[in-house]
Length: 278
Image 1: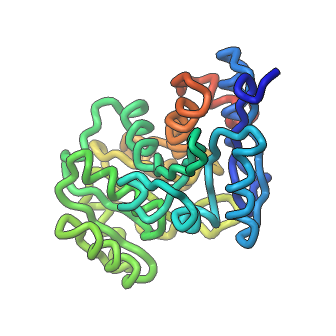
Image 2: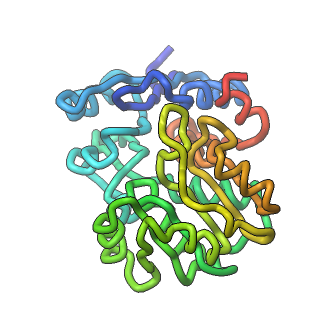
């Protein structure tokens, strides 16, 4: 069997053993009868460039990149998409036939696709959007919301200067709200997005006041361990439309799989179950 008949891809990070991506991509490979494999690759920061330059020689056609390498790969890649440049990070790499490494960011695409699949009637322009957190995930979400037609984004982060930095990058549609006033942003917004790790298994809970939640709002949490966080549980109880974070992981994986393996996979119940190990 030639290398071309058995393409390889994977996900680089440190740590990486917790990643659900191999389960998902292997499910798609099996479902569509594609010869290939997708593996978890534990790679430290000091070895990142050496590994990336070596993988194409081993039959790899590309890879996903996760913490802590999403920013560092931009200094290694030979070609960077406009989206990755804007967001200052990449999560998807394509190894080109000429030996070059192309870096892209599909997090924003995955975020929007997840909401549109689970809440088809949603529109970013329905009213203000509240974004909690100002890290890399928030940057991707803000870019996606603006692209989708959001006119005002209420951004709140535990350290205000980091939020102010995003306002400088994204402009006048961003209104920075002090963290102690984040509950007011939740009350005012029609769309609420948690981009922090608060509420994740092993992390502190999201302590933002949620009494402003009400029917008609859409609430989504990028955390997917647990699948239903306190934020989503209370939002559902308040009559909001809720969207869990697992779908973003699934949808952001689609463009990479299509480029590497030549087929656009479906994000369906079977894919969700595979990612969850069910």
